[in-house]
Image (cartoon, rainbow, N blue to C red):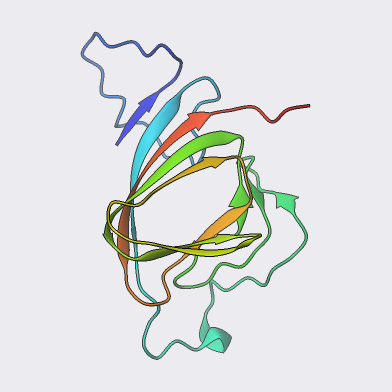
Length: 141
């Protein structure tokens, strides 16, 4: 929806910073607002026929810099982490946050703050609509 390249963000001018090319992570010194619509697990879901399914694997860095551990399928995002501070807000439906410590069912109005931790998202029971504010962060050395 919107991207700012640095903070404090420039708030004057005529440019449309919502029309920039997609990138999963926000600018390192800035941030972005993203709306994510996710489908529910199909009623007749067969993991053997899911071309998007990726088994859990050792951590590795994607070309876009995001660390992933697999786990994605037709209704789940991969387990991942990025150098960001994220606010995730459920707007509609139900979404399950998958953490190393367990799962958290999130419903409309629920908010999660993530600090570069390993996590994933899944929709085993219903679709969902979420807003994410992601801001550039830095892992401690």
